[in-house]
Image (tube, rainbow, N blue to C red):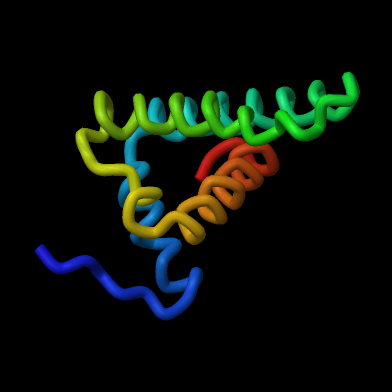
Length: 101
């Protein structure tokens, strides 16, 4: 199957939302992203800022659990890494600001 070609993040966003239909998947993304933020802040505070890439582990682990076991789809990160990363943060911001998407 041919991959979709998106010309902009605005064009990608509806596709991204469609890959995150289940509230449990969105919640897992939120938990993973918040843990990643906490890990980055902790590493900076203890002077080990160079370890901050380790924060990607819980961020992606929680998200991928949602995709593989709840949504039963392939994470968009595998095909659209940058736009998927941007989508994760936009989704988190919307969830924290309005409570849902």
